[in-house]
Image (cartoon, rainbow, N blue to C red):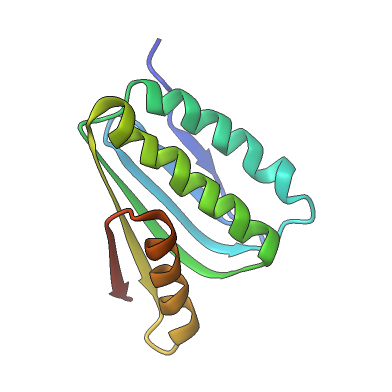
Length: 127
């Protein structure tokens, strides 16, 4: 059975998540300061574990985050690590497009830090 699209609408404390498996297009954006970070991200990571088993030929992960707290940063890194398995398991291509506001140098540097930590191809783009 094909994996269904994962759609989570944003709230004041949680980001939107739009993962469309048949297109290999994943988007996350907004603010990530959930009261229970584990409860918010764990189902997303479980969904990704299923995606990695049969990914699209090319997977693009667009990050449009305005702000996230420390506990969210650990789960965001885990999302990247799960998606990194796309290339390791199936040989499919995977890249991250990290968007940041032109006035937010810290968010640009955070994207660079994730790129350096993971070794994943990142495009860091001013929005």
